[in-house]
Image 1 (tube, one colour):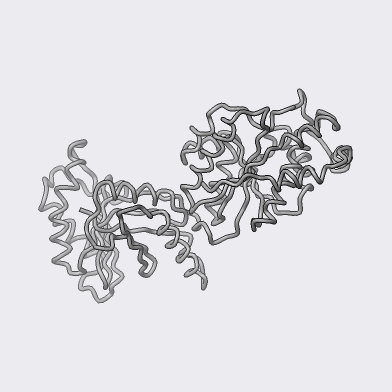
Image 2: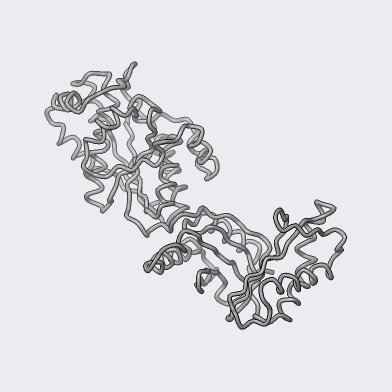
Length: 402
């Protein structure tokens, strides 16, 4: 019965003279996320609202609507959306459509509850429409009561289980009966591109999600240590990266074999500093790839104090390996907060698959929790061909279009 989907944004609405840029980016993203063979969607914008309909203006099938709902639930920049019925802006037409749909909408609610709390919410942007918003609400409440068992309905303006929504515009009117959540934030692509150091753990996928939410396209850099890590290590990373791409238009995965660098650290440097040295090397490899492919920042899932390499001292030492901006959106979170987000967005199950990680190769029995730049640079100088190893690893990165 739905022939449109009404989309709402929040943060974009507070933008100033460049608001149209955010709106255009949002609409472009929706176009891309809705691409599917055999379905020709049209995305339009009218004064603070975006709506989707089929190009032939026919109703959505159940499968088509499910597809649209899944895509919009992952569209950054949208606050919420509603499957809707688009009709003429005439009160008689609106009342007739509400009368037609009321029994259908209430059937599921009445099957579950004896009394259903409901409300009418009307919004009139066409100031020449003969009724104001409050009068529209009163009129439609009467229509609802006249077309069902009104003894099973209770008006509740604050805690309604069902909201009949109506937006009246000069071009058309929209009726809707549910509000579905989107992730909010800013549309991906309105900010600069970041390169994420993606591991198979819980934190870095959450960091990618949160950075996308601020409008940054994210691509992925991950490391393996073949032959010391199995193929399952890279398979897991590919799966996580492909999943994260469902929240954006698509980002590449750069896979680097870190083992020659790890061997050099093992052979020439103090064991307790290996993890710090690994991390500095990873940032340098990331910086080289970012310079080549146009990334403006590196991104990690670091959280202060979570592991030995993430003390303030060690994070400061690691950061000094690069001149690039390093984003750490999880820096103040504890593990439970990251787990809650990972569970909510759907990455937790993928991250929970147990496979070896490259960071554990030759890992020390006791990692240093304190370091200085001078000390770690002295360790790095013990590796005569340090820069050449880093450059070769970056140059030989495998690139996957996911």
